[in-house]
Image (cartoon, rainbow, N blue to C red; front, side, top):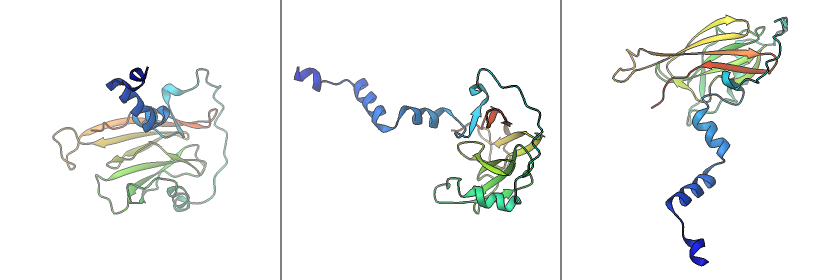
Length: 190
């Protein structure tokens, strides 16, 4: 009987290490979800969508873009030991169902990590993605509650100056779910 309890296979050891290294949910979230908990992927939407309510909410948040940045940036995790600075606030609208501000690491360059902060009527919701991506994204307003993001990245063999890779993603505020829904994809990593 002692032999059976002390005998382990490589598979058993690997399974034990997986169990003790981190909870399975956290492991899956980190490896497969490109978005933070405040954002749902479009295939994670509830099976029965609530009927779309007319976009009649005309309430506006208080404050300007700088105030919104100051309040939200403290909730964005540091990039190692480096903080974030406001790169572009032109997408901030305290009256919109979904608006944004773009962050860049402090003292960064054009290929440095960028994050997109999202807001609902001026209230900070979180970042659009779980991790930042290099190169400033191109962001366009589609409607009061939706934005389109083009991420830029270098293809294999390209340098930062001549990067030609692009990936499209959409983010929309779902009033019924009170969440941001992401469609599309994020840049490849590797």
